[in-house]
Image 1 (spheres, rainbow, N blue to C red):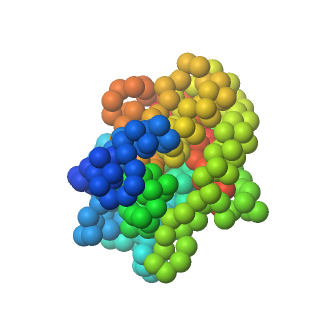
Image 2: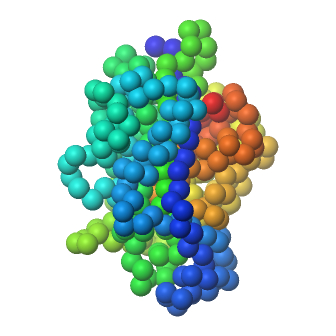
Length: 315
């Protein structure tokens, strides 16, 4: 009942880099057009033989190694994804099999770009309730597989990757390392971001999403800080869903986190949906941009026009 914390984090990206110049040879676009509108320079693209669970498994193995744990130490696996091809077995079960986790509860969570922060809150609640002792929480998406490569307004955005966190109970007497979640959605606007059809394709109403994200979300992000008992000025870092640099920067400015490092991994990784927050967070940790114990706001938003955010302590 002391709450939970992130013990370690890890990430994985495929080797292939797709540049703006590469895209200019595929659709009617240019490096200048892409940078000026979304701020992206490159993105990573998985091959046909790299399924979502492989991306997730690599990231999870790195997080486990960083935590000094074995697969047998995990009793809950949550995978946030919206690009699973098959209905069953789910990605969580496939990751558990890849890693050799013996008998975990294994569930997928599909809240698209807000999936990781929803999954993190779910793991926190589960551990607080005593239903699990240690969880792997993974965000993994292969957006290249659902991209419409003839639509220059969306195909320039997407990338593939995964990020993972090991979540466990906070030590006796210690403050919780994962703060209360602030989550919700705008169901009547859910069609503004979608992955629909046969074959499934990603599409969105870009202007509607931009207006919603830059006007409605800043006060909600501040509420997430308030629930953790902090002001935005107390934050060491802000990791928003890496949707588009032209959304991230005004949202971060309106939040007022003037002392914080702002994650801008979207410039080199593109929009990796549920993977974007743990991927960007893991890179900040790896680069030494933030230190153990630092307060970090994680805030996901997107598909369904869902959002979820919480302040966590850096592992």
